[in-house]
Image (cartoon, rainbow, N blue to C red; front, side, top):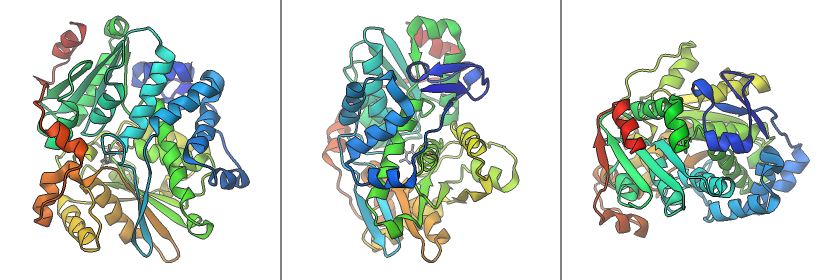
Length: 426
Ligand SMILES: *Cc1c(COP(=O)(O)O)cnc(C)c1O
């Protein structure tokens, strides 16, 4: 698999290089040179086989022979070791629950696949995974890499801006996992990571790698559950499917669009955001104007400068798709809360992020269409918020109670690159 840097088309790398480097020079994202495509007959037969074998076909079509078939299949089996159920919410809307992995958010798919691939290609080199999280990536990456030899994991997150249970899930682990609460917002954490990657000396000394959704491994892994979701529907519904994606850094939507580009017949996509609405405003006006990040109850989507947007633009350009065909909607905290209550009344407990996708979807869906929204996190991860809204207790799954009892091990740090640099070099 060849990939180019979106900022410098001449910079080309292999899949293994892209997986190791994460980002190209001048913080450019890597994008596939060839976009594989299956015809409809092939897609229909792929939808009939099991998740693991189908995921192999998908990932092999992108990655090619850089990873042996046996190794790739092993990585997929180890990474995708949990179910992807579909819940029917109402007569024309369903939810695909992506939060049944070890850290209860869809980030487990990409995080676990990335960890498997890096373990497979890095062998004995010592590497440092440096990543920023808006809440769920931190846990997924920490759990996926925990205890792996030769891999140091450093996670930055915005202090007091992730839910207490999200924090407990990855800031209590120790061993090869170090966590830093940055006294700022997620976008600042993300830009500190990018500065570290631009620092040639630092990068060479500690072999930096990013586990953010800028890493192509994570995006490729996420393509697979779009196929799994479509496989659950009969053909007449499948052909009229509208998918609503709760979006922050826009990795999840990028993966969905890559699935469509492979030939998966998805009628249209909806990008649903909270009040951090840089992309919806851009689609409205054509002007890219990130504002200061606003804290919301859907904190994993508190991103005002979404990292993956250049990839989406590149894909639309390459496929000659029109950005005007991308639907979108913005949901305030107030509307998110009332929608959580409405969903609860019809018997579905939903986390704030997934609820945003449902809210935009139900207002956008037309006759004959069937709506599918992505359930991106387990509601219990946002226990405080949800209990306040619904005025009732919700049960915590074992994964959460287990970590909730442990003490936090995080460092606290001012948003200053030199301090971070010293920390990394120590
Ligand atoms: C990360 C996250 C999102 C946003 O996904 P992106 O790929 O960054 O757009 C939505 N919901 C939850 C629960 C998340 O953790």
